[in-house]
Image 1 (cartoon, helix red, strand yellow):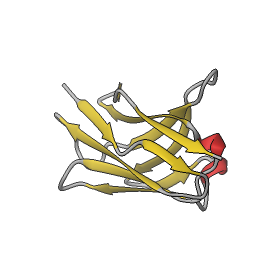
Image 2 (cartoon, helix red, strand yellow; image 1 turned 90 degrees about the vertical axis):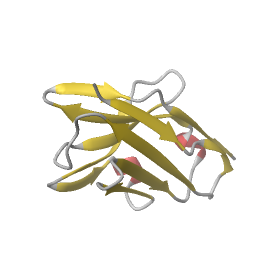
Image 3 (cartoon, helix red, strand yellow; image 1 turned 180 degrees about the vertical axis):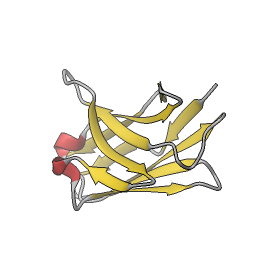
Image 4 (cartoon, one colour; image 1 turned 45 degrees about the vertical axis):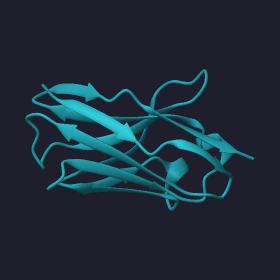
Length: 114
């Protein structure tokens, strides 16, 4: 069983920064890709960033502003979000694929006020 717990969301003014954390537990390995997704009001859940043994990838809308990183010793993945915009407002979810199964956290709300 894999569990993911996100933290670090909140209310921030436009131009500000937040760092999200996702702690993973269970049978996971550093080779398992982990990612952040987000779902804004009335929108579908979209990929924000992913990190794997092959490197990192970002949605075009966050390139240059967000950075995904991982601490394998702590089984934790981070999302540093800078220069936040109102359109970044969403529930942010952590996700991991283990042995073909995708797991999700419960999400953390990020609200950017303009």
